[in-house]
Length: 139
Image 1 (cartoon, one colour):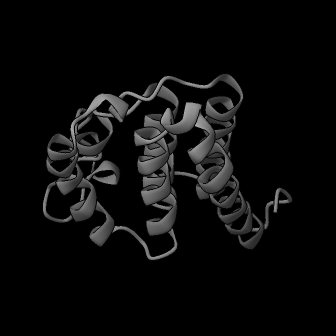
Image 2: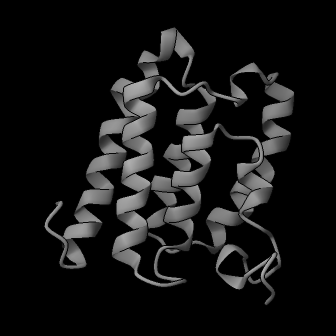
């Protein structure tokens, strides 16, 4: 481990979280990184609350999706590191990380309504349940 590539952002195979988040918008990349590292560094509850805060800001301010302009072929290529990262993530994190990725990708579909109506609320609910399991009062 070193300060530039700490272990809490890496899979056992050496894949970095930034191999996934470099294609994402700011709020969604931050939320993704906090969920991925939750329980791997510091206070898991604090990381999850930070992830929720970034997701809420994305939801309220229509954060511009970076990936929405990718062609389907480019998207498939960029999704390969995500799939590898999900295989190494805790089971409860997989649907949350997958939703964050896809909300960022399709955030502008139907003027942003697709991700905002379908994925956002379920993702927040999932995170709040985990926060409640950890003894937080958010869930």
